[in-house]
Length: 620
Image (cartoon, rainbow, N blue to C red; front, side):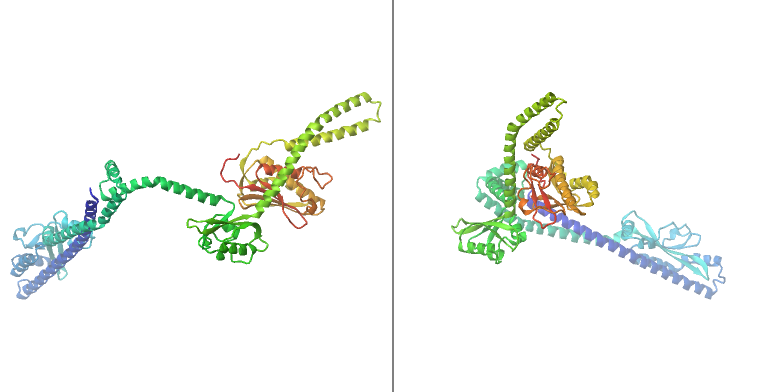
């Protein structure tokens, strides 16, 4: 079926439904009005008959025909009304005047008809009829059912009395058949007007469909001109999919052209997606300016490095992005406007702010004009990486030294221990003077053997058991372990950790060991300071890292020792081993993290463990 036919039929059907709804509402109102009119006329007729009955009753008493006012006399009077010309005239005129009234009757109190518009019914029992007043006071639905439902005669009744004695009932019968016949003319008129409206709407819908679908024909012709080979290809597609209307044909042609353009679009979309992905994943800030000095593209890190809202970069001139007097702002403004490159330099955007590494390169666009590409990098991660590389270099040197010690010292130590045991046996109990010296030599050999084993354990490869862990939960667990010992020394352990905390990949046992080393160092430093205090453990997030800060209130780390504290066997305590911080540094290196001593004013030292936040990738 063509789309034009569908639109015409749809609009015609809609108009038909509207016409039917309007006609039904109008017809319901007409039924209500007619029932009201019929009831009013019947009630008026009953009042007229009642007035006439009272006049004739008064005349009968005045002429002496009636001398008593008892019920029997009144019933005799009611029976005499059957032959009253006035009453008969009212009966006949009421039926002739109103074509909805079936009959009029005077009914005695015992239900026997005393007078009726149909003389043959006189003396019979009046049938039970539903009152028309009940229909009039019901809803539209009930009135419609009463008029257009089963044939029935409804009654409008008026009870009469004389001298407080019931005289009879005036009953006016309304026939629904006659009522429908009286309304037939209006119903035909409604149907005629409704049919004309639907016919006019159909003609108008056909014309509108013709004018609306005309552009589709022009689009179809333009598509055929754009791709002549699409005509035969879309014909088979239309037959296969059953699309025979105008929209279906045009849709098939557009679908074919879309397939033809898919390769080009896919290449472009892939390139655009790759560029966007690279820009979003770059830690560096990239800001591209066109030849006029307007920013046209920025990476996700650029707003963070410049301290600007993300939506306030694109489309703004270089003077609006770098308006300040800092060295970075002046250099970028001058380089972009004069079309000169800037070598990598370290500067700051705000006084006392984080240092930024900036470089500006010139790029040529398609028109041959030069734009500028500004590269920004946070200098702190660079310095942190350099520090980590330095720690790794030192650990590598320790590893090389360990292998040499293991080879050169381990075997001689074993030989010395064996010969020392032989010497003790040969000396026996008699050489008591030699025993203390032999024991001293034995202890020193054991200590030296312990040093060698420590080197070997430190340099031996570790198999990590990485799992997703909550830093806050782990810090709370470590705090519970040291709480009792710290309290015995008069030290409070304070934990500041959100719940839930940052999720990272970690080997729980190794990281707890590194954290315990830091906590124990802090407790020992505060104990040596001989005073109560607070050891603070804090968990927070910063720059895509989860961090644990351990801050004590001890004497702190001297400036001259800050570069050596992570060296193996370096310690400032006489009873210290110098292994704890070096081991913690190695554990953090295995987790692709870092351990840092924060610059802080004494008293106290503050260490930070830095873990990359979990991003959902597999732990490797």
